Length: 307
Length: 224
Ligand code: SF4
Ligand code: SF4
Image (tube, rainbow over all chains, first blue to last red):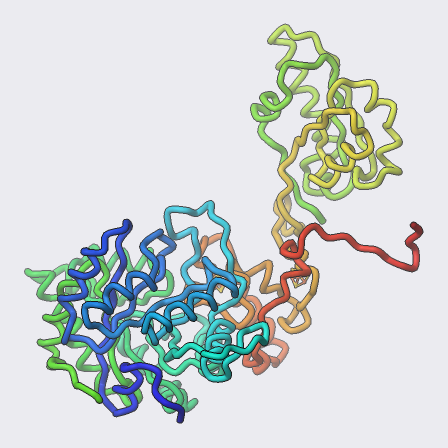
């Protein structure tokens, strides 16, 4: 095993159950906005993802926003989608991010631009996520760019990938996960989980294939604060599985925010027990302030320190 | 074949402007005839429509029609060479290739495009065509069970699907079949699913539009 590339990797290698969270950059150039959000998370999380123009909506760049959040004392995970940048831009960004001390990257294909406000834009998709993972792996571990050019000072990156346990066809999605790990993915963050039975089945298959021994798997948790949010995810978000029983439960409850927190905690408790789950990835879209409360109530506070 | 769609009449009328007395509508007898956009039938229908329009407006115009075998060959364009010269403006109902070839043969003429050239596709139903290839210049169909990931996956992914498909439909639109689901089903039928685990290298897009306008020479036949 080579030297850990980041603090997050160190914690995982030390055997800690990690907690990651997410931060959406602003539509605008507001640095205070990021710093304020970041400060609220300090001490509660082991890593924070910064989305890269998520759902194809223009926002401050993932790397720049991650840089400002890092200045507040957070360990950051940048996201890189192949939708907006070709191999030249992506590799250049990896070099830039590493030089800023941003040493975790989640490599993604990205939502199609038709989801956002610029459906008329031209997409790139020069590489797919698997090719990007391989490219970053070769940059970091072999010191070469995609074109074969050697670097005197290679970047340092702990490389991650996404997986959707609810995507169809099941077998093909599983093969894609294997391929990502084969290409060099060291950690996996999953799509938000609501359907636990299906997720447990997916993890069974993951263990059968030995995937959990090759990469650290973090379970995606998306606390929903209203029944409307859940319904929206069910119908409008690509690849989400929201059981009707959960929607009913949220409908019937008196305090949807409290219920949303409870549901999130229940899911966390269940996924913690699953063999092969090494952490959680909280994605409280539009409800970031709830993160510390959920982490405390789930008994995941304080976070471990590593040397 | 190349699939095209006729522009709306209002757009054509606006494009043509007022600065002419005689118009030739030139159809093309190959691809766009099949996609019911620019063949003889469409040429005549459009001519009738424009005659009525200009008649009502009281503009005195001559509108003629002709359809050649292919507008992408000078040989066929020359069949109506004189007719082209005899008219003030030409409205071509060929694909963009045909329009430009007309311009090249008759550099003094103003030629307007009457179609939107849509894609390379197949006839998939009565009055229905669907894209199947983007002409990437380096065909890789052999490795995908004969279903093109470049043209039929909305993101041109080469190493498997994104996580967005639902019930076999692409995340972009319910009307689009997920190309990767099609590849998967095909490879499964062929007992070749394991090939999905093979890493597909980044594509060399130089052979596509990204290498600049393309040209092809067959040395066997080419004479300078
Ligand atoms: S691989 Fe290229 S040439 Fe072959 S069908 Fe697809 S787009 Fe066309
Ligand atoms: S849903 Fe299927 S066709 Fe659409 S982008 Fe994803 S993999 Fe490609």
